[in-house]
Structure formats: structure tokens, C-alpha cells
Length: 271
Image 1 (tube, rainbow, N blue to C red):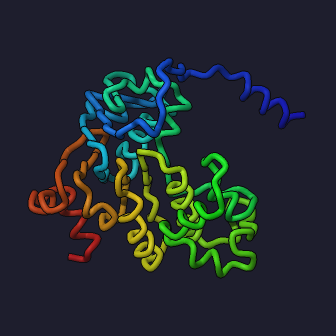
Image 2: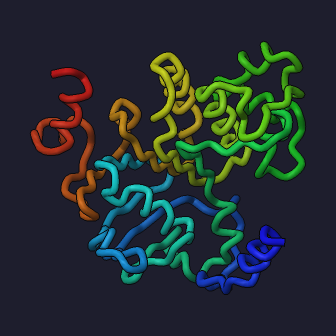
């Protein structure tokens, strides 16, 4: 009864995010994203983001770098409208995201986070989650792009192998590659990678890096990374510190600036 009461309380909690009225089709979305003077703070806390401004052109990649707690993941939560900004404008293809139907907005975005969520089911079912009635050949194709097909074939029952609760029967790298395959299969115009390689070993990171070069083609990509090698080839990189953008530019430019990004890079490569 205690559990039922908690569930009922959650269901009865009013939704603060108001749904937009503009219906969109993900197939028609180019993926141009714009943040204009965006400010945000969590309830009862000091400002998390201050005057955030950046533009991501369609089919380009933005890397986001910053220390823990700097506001990187909050940017993603605002784009997904898990929260709404206090001030400023966030737009997708020049349409304010607050005006877009919430379900349609999220259909346009594939998210691969550091904490990959897999449910108790088969590998095939976990990859197919988020796609509408995919064929097995499409699942296999997505797995190959995500460098997951080889290890899946070696599992006891291949694509029919039960992964266990939260994917406990798989390694961290295997779970991440299944999550990438899921994102590929969804085929959304926007791909978000939130520290997707932070918890994997170096060998797995190389495999994921190889798959990312294929996955990011012809879609807008946002990559949040602690490992700067993940975003070295991004079209633009922004460095966030205490909720503010303190640097932006390509990898080579930021290295020459000899500022925060350069210090992080030198630390990671052992200089």
C-alpha cells in the first residue's frame, strides 16, 4: 500500500512543462539549434547557467567541455524540455521549442547518456526500443554501425540473449554500444552524447570512436565529454565554467589559446 500511495502521488503531481501546439515531423527537421541569452537555475539554488549563447548548424558537431557541476548536462535537459529556461530562447529550425509539441520535439532527439538504461529483455528488444516496428535486418545494420554486432553474435543466444535487469549481464562497454545502436536505429536528426565514453576502457573507447564517425554523419550532434579525444574533431567546442561559456572554437584554436581547454588537454595527454 505504501508503494501504491507513492505511485498515485507521482501520477497526481501536476506537470510543470506545458505542451506546445506546433506539430512537427522529425523527417522534415534539419537540426539547426540556437541558444540565445539562456539563463536557468534549479529551485532554491544559485544560477546554473548564465547568458548562454551558441548556434549549432545542421549536420555539424558541437563539443561541450567543463568541470563537474559547470552546467553541461543542464543544457541538454533544457533542450529536451525536462526543464524550461528562466530567461532566453531555445529554438529548433527557428521554432521556439516551447511552442513545439513535446512528443514531437523528443522524437527529433536521440540521447546516449553515461548511465545507459537497459531493461530486462533481449538484446534485440533493447536496441529496438524507441523505434517503431523495426525489422531484424535494420537492427543488425544499426548494430554494425555502432560496432556492436560482433560481440552480440558471440553471446549465448545472439540477439535473443537476455541482458538482465539494467543490462547486468553485459559489460559497461557492451551496454554503451547497444545504446549507440538504439540511437542509430531511431535515426533522429539530432544526436546527443552525454559523456557516453566516460565509463569504458580504452579499447572500447576506440571502438566507440570508430562508430561515432559513422553515426554523426548527416545529423546534428552534441557531445559532452570529459575525455577530450572524443570531441577533438568537432566543428565547434564550447568550454563552460560555473554556468558561463568562457571559451569557444575548434580544437586547434583552443589549444593555441593556452587557457582552460589547453590545460585540460595537456593534463589528459600527460604533458
